[in-house]
Length: 429
Ligand code: GDP
Ligand code: IMO
Ligand code: MG
Image (cartoon, rainbow, N blue to C red; front, side, top):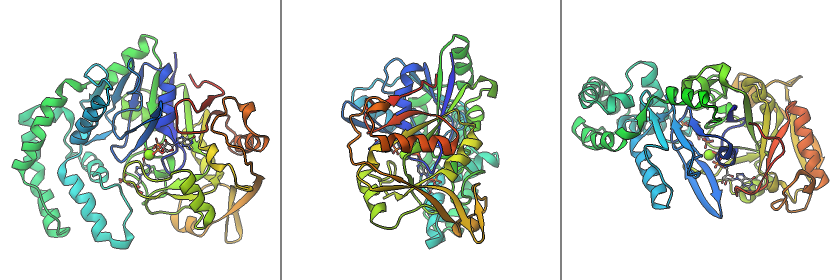
């Protein structure tokens, strides 16, 4: 029996959905613990693609139970749409296999209006958020004015909490952001039916996880975003509003740290970022365009073109420390085929100093030039490789060099979006 956390080491979109879908085979429960529908996790099974924003990426396995922990911020309308979409594609989603924590906070219509309004007011200084209301919802959670699932399913409580908070939100939207507003009647008309639909799915997630662990089942925790979008450890303020690091799996799901056995860090074989913020190894040239095109680097949530660049092991090493990584899952190695030379950043040059640790200040980060090591590329197509030995020597050397630089074993290698295009060299469970 063991419990494994999967998190992103870079700026998100490393392929967490794919690897969680593969590892879910071994688990009984798959648990989301932070973020919301800013996430977009892709699973490709038998040529069919599924993108999950809120529902954990174990949902395609009929015998698994998917839990949305207290640390997730949930837009109930999006959750219902996602349930219906999956049902429409023949996937069974019901109160036995999808459960939401009673303590999870609700994204309300005013959170989305505030998110959009603030980005508009910031103009070219905007963060490039996903516009899903994530930040404003976590803000209300921290100031103790949030509305939770336990409130939603208690009509009186929901009405009370809403009427307490709405005046202030309306004032801020109208007077400060010069934005449209939404009135109480409209919110009640939309949200009270959500309560009826979702009530059977609401339960105590912490207790369910504890019972599963006692019964000897494996539990898989699915991170969203990536370590460098973490509110404390990322490129603040160009971050999301939650802790994305592995430590938050415990807070956001309601379990203790003694229950965790392994932490798998997702590493894309190169680097991408969506939205604004520093990105030392970004390539604004034909190699960047090539990675973007060959890697089909468009956001799974907003459809935005992802910025692309070389692999940065200053970033991945930072993530190895912050998350206590026990292993790496490397994705998209296939995308690097056909490049003569590959570069890996091993340090940053900042003025007269060589930095080997990721600097905390974004001003400093913006002045950093990556120090690269060059490795020979390969031309072979990797997408059919089944074993490490099937990879060309230069691809194997690339993987081994990352292991050395990050001082963490590569346990999984992914060479295509499909579930089968995965080599599990060491099983994290
Ligand atoms: P997540 O947010 O970390 O789950 O990642 P996304 O789903 O947003 O983005 C990863 C994208 O890469 C998706 O389109 C996946 O289908 C795709 N993908 C995942 N692994 C591989 C791989 O090894 N090779 C290729 N070519 N595509 C992959
Ligand atoms: P997954 O789980 C990549 C980015 C946004 C923006 C910043 C803040 O699919 O890896 P937010 O809406 O969270 O307030 O936006 O964070 N962002 C992501 N980038 N992958 C994600 O999730 C992301 N979730 C948020 O682009 O820069
Ligand atoms: Mg994504």
